[in-house]
Length: 356
Image: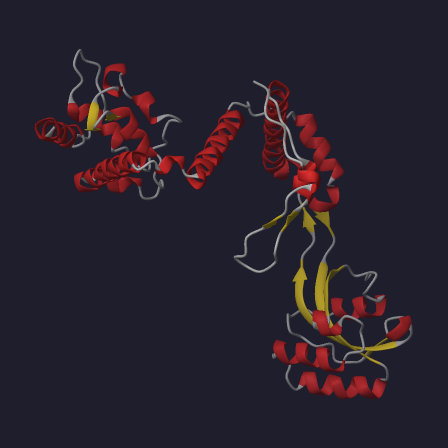
């Protein structure tokens, strides 16, 4: 075993030291094959890195632990599975050796775990089941071809969402709403004395404003057009639009007919927090983004449908039984770390034995 392993290690070190591209030959050279495993991270990688290897190269054994073999193809896939930004480090022989030694250690530990029958433990079997299910789902999703999106469909989406691409100018402001002009004048003098202090204005809105949501939104009105909106009286909107600089406070108290408590008169102190310029994006400007969006949406829908079809087929071909009485008697404790409290189903019910 020692001799065979030493030879394999020497072969691996030799194979993984090259930097030229693989060349077809009756017996592939080690340096040619190693170029695939040490691929440059800046170079676009094929979906399967083994595609760049000659058929005879793919089965070259880089290392062996007992009956488990690591071929050059397997090793190339392991390199390719690393973070693309870190993959270039495998140009260094010591990094390739470290990855190889990691595989050896994993195989040795896995073999010992099987020897101890740890693979029969419920947690291990459940983890394997979950990984198999995830891998199958990934395979099904990868097998769905990306849909084609036509120019007419892009235009239809653009027309249906025109408001997203053509908007008027908007501003964002905060306010302090008071019941009387005298109160509002005092508040205005206070905040103008702290004109550049955003935290001070928010605190004043929480403490003094009679607006219903002042304590939760600090008087923020979000973005609104020059016509105002449901929570922005037109008088407030017109005053806010005259401001040009974020943090600027309107120099006068603004009186509204219905912006105060109970939709009655209100007296407002206005502070500008942001401006949003008009947006005019043409179909040509948005075509690529819309096409990508529709492609992603339709591909995801097609992948989900493929999974639903697979699950429906598997359920139809299998015997699936659920004991509703047993399920209804599961009680979950809210205490962190506490296990679910299980009770026996009524009348000693249980799932029938599966048919033989």
